Amino acid sequence: MVRISIASGKGGTGKTLVATNLAAAAGNALLVDLDVEEPNCHLFFGVKELSREVVNRKVPFIDEEKCTVCGTCAKVCEFHAIASLAKSVLVFDELCHGCGACSRFCPEQAIGERDHAVGHIVRTSVDGLRGLVYGSLRIGEASSTVLIKRIKMEIPKDGLTIIDCPPGTACPAVESMRGSDLCVLVTEPTTFGFHDLKLALAVTKKLRLPRVVLLNKKGLPGPDVEKFCMENRISIIGEIPHERAIAEEYSKGRLLVSNPEHRRNFESVLGKLLEEAERR
Amino acid sequence: MKEIVVLSGKGGTGKTVILASFASLAQLPVIADCDVDAPNLHLLLSPEVKDRGIFSSSKVAVIDGRLCNSCMECLATCRFEAITTVGNKSVQKVAINTDACEGCGVCMRICPSGAVKLAERESGEWFVSNTRFGQMVHALLAPGGENSGKLVALVKQKARVIANQSGARMVLVDGPPGLSCPVISAAAGADLLVLVAEPTVSGQSDFIRIADLCNHMKADAVLVVNRFDINSEISDSIEREGTLRGIRCVGRIPYDDAIPIAMANVKTPIEWSDGPSKSAIIDTWKRIISRT
View (cartoon, each protein chain N blue to C red):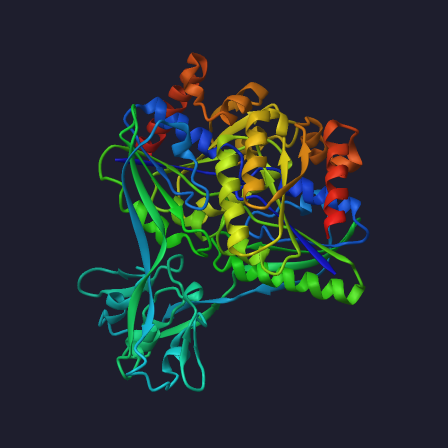
């Protein structure tokens, strides 16, 4: 089993471009899109939806018959998700982390739990892939990590899995990267891209994740990412040139691997990634 | 005082460059960077930090190994798989995986020997700075930090206070990508949301989702299509999707190779070039101003 996550720090550096084309070049990979706030991988394939399942998290449900408004639940909630008023108890679903403290410590056993939908998981079949699974956060839902954790449970023990991660360095990105064998940090050689690459490297370091860099939009003016990587002994596993034609193909939702030259590039990157993952 | 927040859903559509350009065109605004986990605005505005502070809004469990009697009750009750066992079979102890711990305190409350405490967790830092365009509030979340939404709320609140004190008429906010807590936090209470979209199939899908979020929040929003000429057909389609949702397009900015060059020279495109994007951004700003 090999799990390769594609992350970046900065958004728009080409994570989805790399994840989709690597998966297509591999031929037998499972592609998992954990950017549940803005999932895009499925837009690049003719996907056939197999199933769709609502994912819930648990939030407290107060049985007003039993509740004596003693205030214990509000006191034990570290997230201020429960307010104990004069005559009733108020629950704020969006602030709840689902830790279960309120129901556990309620002296009247007046607190149960009910489902709160966070989004759904979609399983699809795609020609040339083992499959494509993505999540979609419910509009207005504040936290995506429950959904991300649930989708990760779909990853089988065998075979190659390529994971498209959300941007940033906060909890959703971290949860998506956690548990992978190798993390590919996609960057662009702009001032912003370089700055956020360093932030992403701090995350892989904290998680002790093996990481390599893929340099996208090579040729854009900006800092010398290659020199930085060499000095810090970070291997650059591949590069994609800055070409308006590539941006235009991507804009139409087309994979680059349909062009033989790009296919060779992605096959070579994939080969090196598998070698690297094997070596670790 | 008006608050304008730039958002996008999809990352990398050009929020920061556009917001920095607006800052260069506005009359002494207060500027806030609410992309707290990957902030970039400071790279264009070169802020001189004059005040800073630690952000700690969450807690983390800490186990005192001397008091722990290895009853393993905490292990079974933690819903975040944040408690693991260490040591060999004869002397097994529990340890906290601080990355997974959400600081709910259940372990502390059920521990029969009082071995668990909750400690403050530092999860970032905030700054108030001077820039050439006005005062700026910004922050940096620790790698993998929790509660980015609360840090966003803190940055915005500080920016509003400064605006009120200094009599600034406008707060300009650079928002984070995505749709979840930090975005909702950045959008809350704004007078106008400016949604920056790019004309790609991904960009269109992401725009629809952020537009739906704006409507869900009943927020007033306008659309700016960046690099519209990469795919004029999808640009038109995004505009139609916006119109369907009551979100009017106030600007189409062309692809411009001068932008990364301006960026490398620590300048906004307004200050740097007479490239095709400059006049389009100025026109966009004028339309936004006329709306607020």
